[in-house]
Amino acid sequence: MRYLKAKIAYDGSCYHGFQRQNNAIAVQQVIEDTICELTGEEVTVNGCSRTDTGVHAREFFLSFKMENPIHCEGFLRAVNNLLPDDIAFLSVEECDESFHARYDCKGKEYEYLLFNSRAKDPFLKNKAYRYTYPLDEKLLDKAAKQFIGKHDFKSFCSADCTKENTVRTITDFSVSRNGDMVSFKVSADGFLYNMVRILVGTLLYVNEGKLTCEQIAELFDKKDRTKAGVTVPPQGLYLNRVFY
Image (cartoon, rainbow, N blue to C red; front, side, top):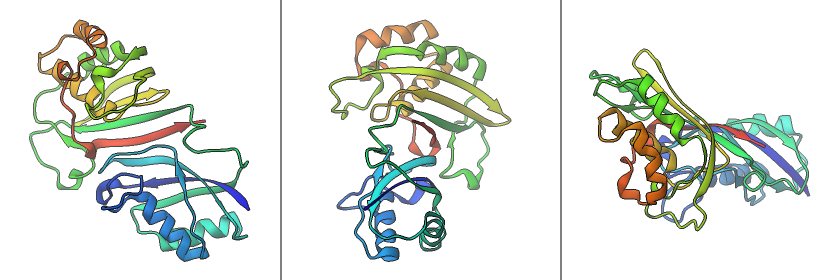
């Protein structure tokens, strides 16, 4: 039996997240079916994260075991020839049998892209969230720093989140602009369900004057989802980096 670690990337526009589902197409299912087509083996791949419907990944890791002796470079070329164009294997390597893509992960970096323009760009339909109001990226960068540190993020996760422990540590959070494109980039030791999208929505509340920078700190103690900002759409969200 061989143990493999793979780095992949995918456009999540056509998928209901990474994790295999019974009633919708997910990235995991496509990859497992493709490996089976290539090797004849039914392989289960472990992903480093459970991305939501429509969310993209520039860097995403898998761990899996298989018996087929195909060389890693040959496997990489062959699997990419069979996969749809919106999923790509970037690298494959042998790994220790104890490695697990999800449980060995030390942290992740997400980027949310916001297209700040009153004009439409059809090529950004599933790649960025169009926000038509004036946006002060310097104010939001200052506000984003309020999230850095170890906090209880109960107010900043979906009401459907079932995690008992909602404490996470954000190590960096920045907001920057390049023309009409505004980037929200956040790194943490872990994220809760919809957490990044709610953090961005809360910063947009600051931009719209519905919250002040100082009031963000109060939301940690309230532990009330209704006090934070909206959950912005998933299409602008990218899993950017994964740390081991």
